[in-house]
Length: 363
Ligand SMILES: *Cc1c(COP(=O)(O)O)cnc(C)c1O
Image 1 (cartoon, helix red, strand yellow):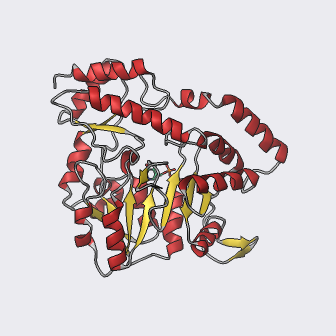
Image 2 (cartoon, protein in one colour):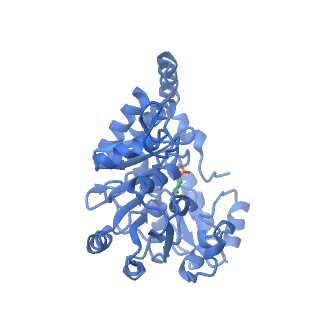
Image 3 (tube, protein in one colour):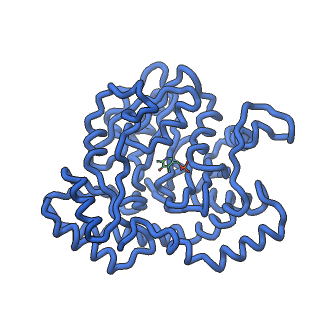
């Protein structure tokens, strides 16, 4: 059996260091917003190349806090790719803002930069880019539009820790960025976690308060805040794992390269990689018209795959008001994508088994 993602094996590599970290936190008697959190924020800021990084409870909250701090609400529109994980959309609507869905590019699966300008209206306040599947969005046209129309750029970096564009890491490519440290992400905690990154001191201070009941001084509430903080244990675990993030991403790149070289099957469309540094392969997503048959075929051969994602946000029950939108490219992608196993702990033998199985698929 080849697991889609063997989290136990991924985390087992750090067992000894995790034990030490737990001891230290226990010894300190301090569990939320302490030294471990500060140390992680310092290291992660340095890693991303930003001035500030603020831990929070999860990736959804990171985006939610970012939009709240920017002051956007009812009547404000935020442009967002139509094929993204639901959290990108939830963060927008939780703040009362309106998501304006833009179709993706069928090659990269990221927002189609050619279609962004026509989606801008007098109500548009921001563009949320999502570096989907681990591949950085082509930022230059987004930067140009943001400048031309005076828009903020919010980055959803939940799938792309460490991906780079023109020598800069994701999180440092917009006004503000949100990361998730959900266990399955390229940098994953042993529970939930997230962080907001950015360079604007006033904005980031506001986020610090917003995530702590809207308070700078205990029991004095300046804003209508949330409780969204990163606990000390998760921060300590993340700091340990951050040290191997680049190495892990490189192993993912190696596997992706092998898949792209060796998978050769007319039924399968392989993912396009625009640049080596721009992709950290959170997911290796192929397309196949007979996707469900391919998934069953692989399952019968002991290979676990997943679909990211089976239903696009505008077709979800929760967002019935958008169900009539015509987004054919997004829907095509959702009907055809299949994510193959990829992880830093996958062995060469396992990768080879996947390649041979896929090459034997006859549709
Ligand atoms: C995982 C994910 C999120 C949300 O992160 P959580 O920590 O699960 O809340 C947001 N956006 C994208 C693109 C994601 O993949």
